[in-house]
Length: 97
Image (cartoon, rainbow, N blue to C red; front, side, top):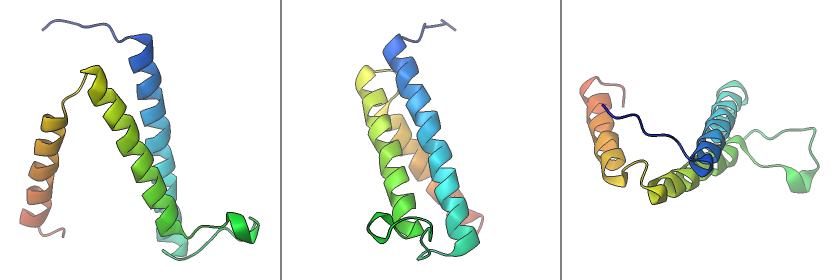
């Protein structure tokens, strides 16, 4: 196995990916704790978003970073799609969805 150095740009993208994943976890946790349509009561009304929108935003941010990583050639969009399909079938097979 050949070890390939990660470029500074790729490192920045992985840092962003980790940050966005953490924010998605937080949004999911808030949805579980307070419900899909709950909003942060400490924000001004024009800044409030329901938890489902916060989760959608964070998942979109993850997909955006994924696209940049794919563009570097470091990861494969085809392999990601194949893995997503594999996971979808496993979840169905195990009765989780």
